[in-house]
Length: 397
Ligand SMILES: Cc1ncc(COP(=O)(O)O)c(C=O)c1O
Image (cartoon, rainbow, N blue to C red; front, side, top):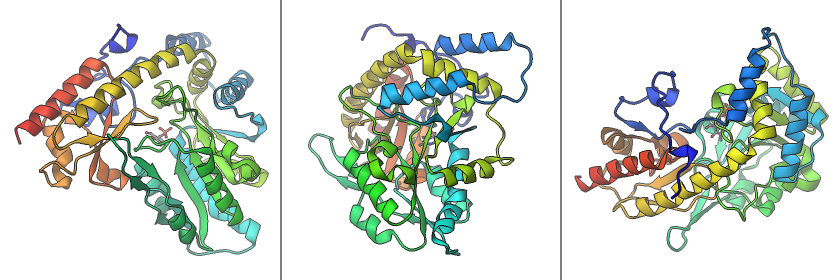
């Protein structure tokens, strides 16, 4: 593999990195979804320029950023948006919370009924806040587990169980929460799956909340992310879309999220819900987002090339270890590793790997303790060291 800017090890231990604080210092942290890569210099340069203006007061989304986002959705996702339908909020989790909070009111104002047991449907295993937020916002969470179809040579796929979904929709269902592409399985949903989901939701007057934070981490050139709103076609208004530059450009600490809400009533409810409960997007975060979306794409194409190479290496290396297996991912830098064949109690697997010097995310967090999630967005050298530690520890079992 040729040399790459992403080969450089950057010591983050003095930067209060949550990722590096969790485990002992000799453990390689491969859990939370941020990358071991320097953000593009176009972003750091833009920040330096912004700092030259010495007043950091309340700031709204600059027109130039709004235009960059419109260009981004059009050019990269074939989606022409009406920028008046956007809301800006610090973080995807805040957006998910606000959307879940308004989901019942949005539905009840349309139907005229008030229900005491509003339900939100999720598709586990899934990024754990999507399991927690419905409950935290006072709703009943209804699980529609993804189903696995075996394939040849570790090419199995995870799919929505539409039969179960249909039977799980009740008069109390107010929202469906989707992670697209799906974290942790790295699945991309097809236009027809998304259209079916949106049609079902629209028929039942249900809000689809589509978290698309991983939409720019597509590992194959021939695949294209389809925004749920685009796939929804005539049901466009039933979809709330949440996007952010944080995974794409490794700026998770910047928290600049945009939310597309075409239904005017829901848009107003969302704005009112976020008012006071979350702060404005920080001044510097707008700067980060604008620089990234307008000038970060050369860096991004090199990133995808590196991630793809890491993915291919990891896929082979993990499947060569007795007791572990993983399927190819379509998107994200988060490998979903099946540990069922290991001779370890599932609930102890995460500790076993941490003890071996590799800090993973336990699958139980996402709703399936047969798996461990491994973040491979790091230098190849670090990734190979992590895999070696896993291999040696398993060999010594
Ligand atoms: C699917 C998904 N949604 C949301 C987030 C968190 O987003 P934010 O940090 O903007 O709140 C993550 C982070 O890993 C994620 O994977």
